Length: 168
Picture 1: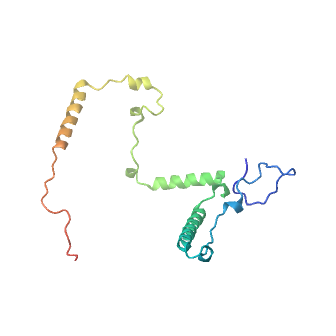
Picture 2: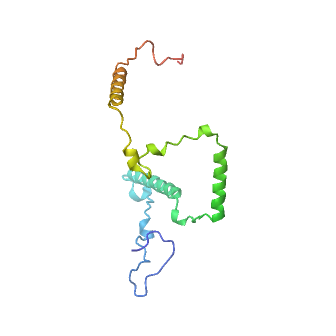
Picture 3: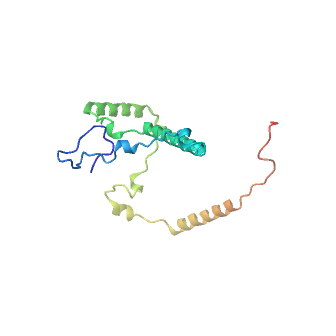
């Protein structure tokens, strides 16, 4: 397997063979920095060398910002709730819930109308009286009339939508 980002210095095994603790990426060869000066390339290549150096500097800066913004989840400590902390949170939640006025709590749908929840007598709900054909036809015709009415809505343009406020 190997380790990509280990900070510990570990030696090879006694035989000099690669093992599971050997780094996959050499940190020295992984870091690429260009420190090019214009005197090394002469006047002919000076502009391209500075452009490459500027690009490399910008890329290194972006890489450093990204590395500083990464959250190492593995390094975070695991916080498990103790029994008394859990009970205290439940008590606090229930107190806050009881302070909310009842009209702000959404009404629960009757479980008889839900088929996707655990219903002990599904056959009773499914064997209930179906919708009458007259009611079904009324719903269809009402829906068609609403669609027709919405398709005939028109907006008449009477004045400008954008009004200048005298800004020069």
